[in-house]
Length: 138
Ligand code: DCM
Image (tube, rainbow, N blue to C red; front, side, top):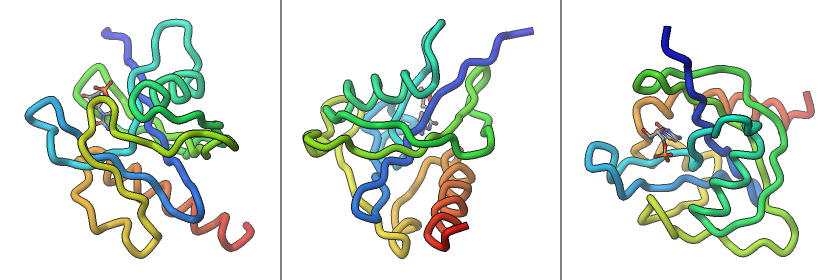
């Protein structure tokens, strides 16, 4: 049996908005939007991978907050997990340094305005459910 490899995506929140990143590569994913992140390396914790990937791809300093319950299938052997995160005080603003060519901070009303990767859609939906629950104090 092939080992599964976790890709961790960030639900990065700032000022009540969620960051979406448009992929510039590979060609089959280019132009579609994702929760930015990447593969967890052997021996690495998912939240460590998240901080590393966001620094590499977006130049930001982030604090992981909590996992969003769920696991979503990507192309085998990859599966997608999501963690909420926020910018640490003093972090630079995110910039599309690697893998992306556009970024958007989405209000709750704007979340479905972007063309998310198919596999990110259920993950974004789960993130929104958690976001709504937090907003209502539960
Ligand atoms: N991926 C995805 N959704 C995300 C993040 C990544 O479907 N939110 C996929 C794209 C790649 C793989 O995971 O096939 C690894 O991502 P990366 O190339 O960013 O390391």
